[in-house]
Amino acid sequence: MMYLCGMQPLQDDLQVRWWNLEARLVERFGKKPDMETILFLIGVQEFGDLRKKFSKEEKQDLMHIAVCTLFGQSGYYRLDRVDEQGWPHFVQLKALPEMGLVEQENFLKDHILLYFDNAEIGEEPDII
Figure 1 (spheres, rainbow, N blue to C red):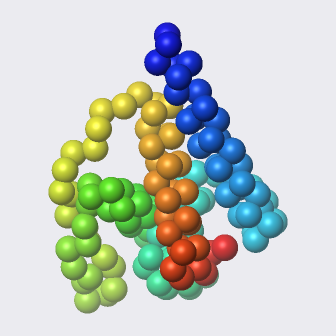
Figure 2 (figure 1 turned 90 degrees about the vertical axis):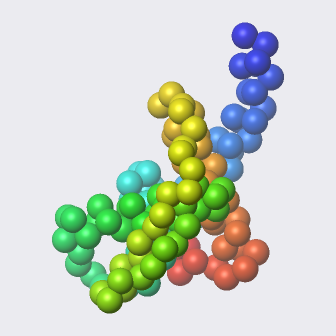
Figure 3 (figure 1 turned 120 degrees about the vertical axis):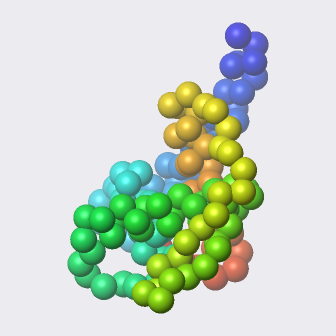
């Protein structure tokens, strides 16, 4: 129980940072995006094709690109190649840690925040 109490400020910080990102995305898009939408936007950003329509399968592929890109920041994936149609392919370098649902969501949120933080230091993503 002490461990959970000791982790509370870290979780609070993550939540505050997440709310700040959501506010920026609301300002940019006019409504609060859910997690799938954020992953889709990151996938489109990384893929680099801003066409208006993607098939359902392509949308899933774009979210996969986002997840691989996000977890690549921590060494879980790396870009292997880009195919002739411009789609990136990744290689998993190590297994993701086993986590419960809340921990998985926080792990993903933390990597999304890192993605946007890194973009602010270097180049600003087009999506915000």
